[in-house]
Amino acid sequence: MAFREKTAWAMAVVMLLTGLFYAWQVTRAHALLPALVGYTIVAIVLSIVVHTALALGNPADARAPRDEHERLAIALAGYRSGVALAAMVATSACVFVLVGDGRLLFHLVIGSLIVAQIGTYGQEAWLLRRGI
Image (tube, rainbow, N blue to C red; front, side):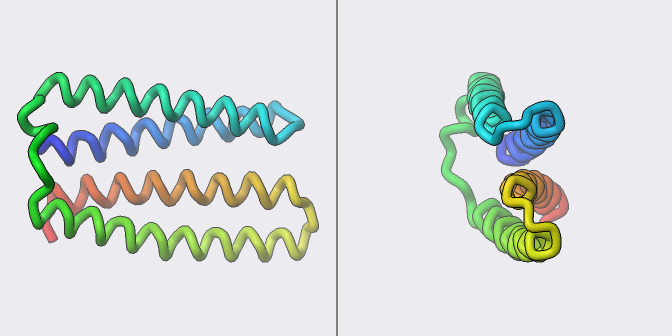
């Protein structure tokens, strides 16, 4: 498995785990700040640990520039996830119009960002494995 594919899979797992952690925090917390701060800290720490471990495991590949196939896969995954993010945020806005709860809107938008990022990494890994 190529280095970029490994990092994409690893980051998809990190985002999934931290997203579940955020959802768990939201269901327990009544304030916005503690859930978001906890999620952010955990996501940053896990991302650093995962990238460091993968880079130490294969330093030559970690330093290598992205080739044309990798750049295209990353761009396509980002485009598709951006479209999905726009749809999820628009849906969140519709929910806000119907319900009128600003805290719910905030959590739906943050959740949309997390889901879109998981989709980005998952698509990157899939496109790098399958080819474009």
